[in-house]
Amino acid sequence: MFCIKFVLVYKNTTKIHNMLTIYGIPACNTMKKAFDYLNEKEIPFTFHNYKKSGIDAAQLQYFIDQLGEEIVLNKQGSTYRQLSDEEKTNLNIFSFLQEKTSAIKRPIFVLNNRCFAGFKPEELDIWLNN
Image (cartoon, rainbow, N blue to C red):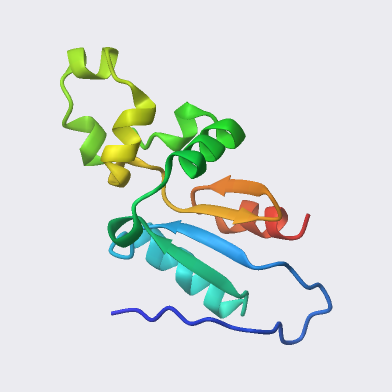
């Protein structure tokens, strides 16, 4: 069990961020690590749950424009790996990701019109502070 908390102000820091949004699904272990990381650092965020809210075409296109299809498409996940070789070859990535949001890389962070995909704490620290 994990808890998503929303912190309204930073404590013990002088740097103030606009609100961070994290996109993903709550049952993902990587997402749980990301939530824990943000909560431990008392970084305020909102959470967009693909399972409840899906993803609109404009947001998905924004991720692809910012990060590239190869990063946004989670090829390590079972949703993609279950496709046949022929399906992978003929895949319309945009349509596939709109329909199968569990195939979108998790998490995707958005802050100040910038995107960061995946959860690597050291890299995320740098990204958050730029």
